[in-house]
Amino acid sequence: MNRMSRRSFVSTAATSVAALATLGTAGGNAEAQLVYTKADWKISEFNQLAKNPARVKQVYDIIPIAEGRFLNNIKNSLNGMHFGFGIPEEQIKVVAALHGPANMLNYDDFIWNKYQIGAWLKVNDPSTSQPTVKNPYYPSKAGAALHYSTKDPDSRDSIYQDTSIQALQHRGVKMLSCHTATEEQARALIAHNNLTQQPEEIVKEMLTHTLPGVQVVPSMVAAIALLQTDGRYSYITV
Image 1 (cartoon, rainbow, N blue to C red):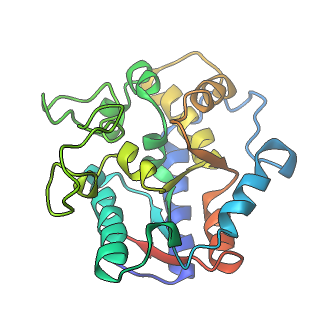
Image 2: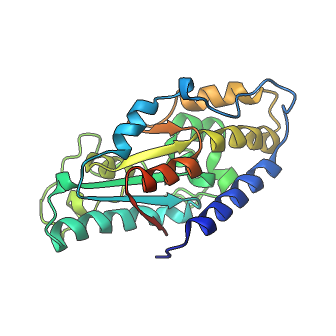
């Protein structure tokens, strides 16, 4: 795991956003809402997240998908703090701040299938080794009801070794989506797939297909800064 200064983080994030922007400029003459204002989103929900009274608060800054390896790191954080350090689960709060390519993990199978996200981002279905047409990191192998055969934290059949987004959300992890990244990705998809749609049409469709429990923030680089300063979240990137 790699810790970095906030200056290095902002530079890395800015580079990622710039790279996405170069992927597509189609629809540039369309009216767009590139910048969210306070009236456009659930700022009160974010403020509650920032001020969460948990004893230990950690924000993961995630840009590359990297086969979803960051999900295993988050699982290890939860297990280490709870079982290794004896911190009660209700006193732990972990936030996954997804932007850049990783932002697409906040969206459901409809978006992944319609816009061929797997082929675009080179994410393969583990069962077929072909570009996936579903979000492969959301569903739990335990099923939608999350029924596990054991509570043994060492068992891979327990929730404590389940690295799916669904299971981690059940354990209290908060997923954040970046509105700026979504705007850039809509334009990139138009160029990549030779679409005739306007960017805001795709953005609105994506926002209606966010995964359950995901919160969209105006700018992830800004959100992380506030989680650190106002919320006193520790910062980590992997």
